[in-house]
Image 1 (cartoon, rainbow, N blue to C red):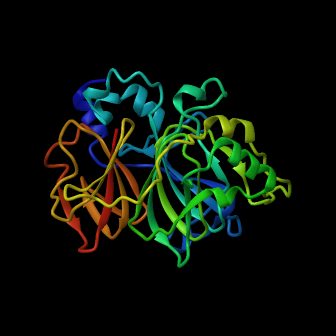
Image 2: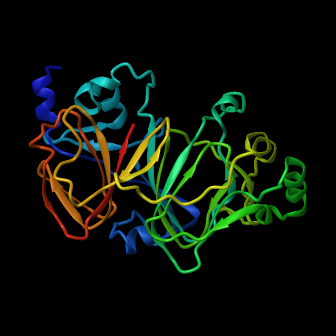
Image 3: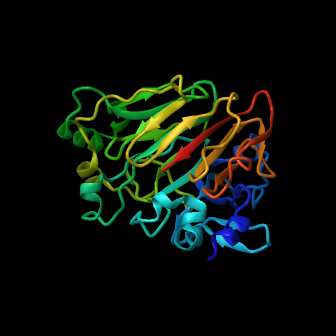
Length: 324
């Protein structure tokens, strides 16, 4: 397609329809804290997939001409205009990141994601992720990493005895905290947290302990003990919350670069690069579109310097920027 035509098609921030997922541990905070209109009035929604290029879960964007286009279509057929020329040779056939909002009104299972060297053998996909805490109720907890001295044998014994939680470190998060969860690190989000999750494009999770809970179907949820034992890194250091440094950097790893905004910013990224904006609070406007708390949007690479200018922003606006 002619680059000029593409620039007209993608001359604003690209927003997508949320993909809501019911979860036994979910709730209604997407409605009460982010003013979302949820599909059903009683269902506990635990996840809203905001930027997703999964085979069965495709984010859809409505363009200025009224046509809807999937994230995969953008990635495969409009890559230079939306994602930039530097990613033209990127080998993945799907957009490499998955971004969600998690509403944990109960504890999630204690789980692990497979590292790259084991994922294919186990029939899954590798998954490294990070969490940004948007809301934390009093007493909320995050479980991440093993206590020093917990070996594979001790952990396996704790599974048999039902004491897995005693082996996992407990952190007490506050709004604004950020935690990096590399593949192989055991973890669980506790009740009372609303979290933005940035991760590799993967949906592979191995549950090792689920608090003896029943699923929404009334049956015990499946556990993946052997796969979990193979994936857990028993040598990983204890995790710690991270705050943005003076440059706004939160997490930089081989899969994503996440930065916290500054109200001193006057534009969203540089011409030729794409990034994703995730609004935490307040409101900002750019390229003719306004974003507010809970909104995720792709800033297309083809936007000019002028189009990237922030034209309106509230004094308490706060957001993070995600880059490949």
